[in-house]
Image (cartoon, rainbow, N blue to C red; front, side, top):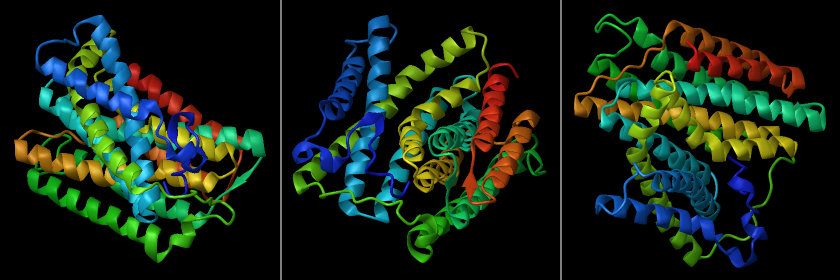
Length: 377
């Protein structure tokens, strides 16, 4: 996520290109309207069962997601690196955790597996969907692109370790039957996952920061926002995150019901959550790749997958232990095969320090297989 913060989602102009740091209207209108809709629902004045209200709620949910990332990026520019990239990761992970817990609390079908489905979908979307698009679109425009081997190998090693510990190992432990960890195992794995993520952040932002930056791949963010703009963004970030979580909680039973009525598997809910969370950061990564800044694109995309596993699993694990709710983490056999294949192909892709269209095409094929088997297992 480092170096990509000045590329705002949804096609926004960089902060220093906007007149006097003027905030786009949608950045405050979407979360405020979302909050008002939630209050109206609590007061009994509106119901998401109504089609007009349902469409409005979905639109405000999407707008609030982009608004949250926008305000997090403004705060990141204000506080500077390395804390800016950490703030972005925390904001996006807060969205993901909030969406997962909102589904868990409703107690619908597949609630115990929603964390697994979402994190697995995030990893597959990032490693194959976003990375594949970055490599293909970047190579089509620039023929061949380069990146730092040290950064790719570091990120992939941490992603692989956390993914296997969180999503494969639970299938083979003996204390509990099935794809679950015992509470003590879950807390231990969550603790070591969080510790490994924190260690990576320290390496990326302090000890070996140069490994994650290509020469000529960084850009100035322009003038920092003033105190008023920063304070307003801080307030609106909280409002946006709250609106997303509460709107998702209201919409989750309807979305889950629609998916089941369509004959799709409940795992599709996790894919939907992952797409909502990753959309802004995915657009940022793709724009960076098309601008021949592949290192920035990889920092943004792979960093999102890493934060998803390293932060989401520990937090959701602690919540599940507190609530006494079983948490299904182990993937089914076809999911394990796709995960191992994705990690293996990613290792080959990032083994030379340069990429082509062919490598991106391979990732997109794996992504297509993942989507198809999610709908038709």
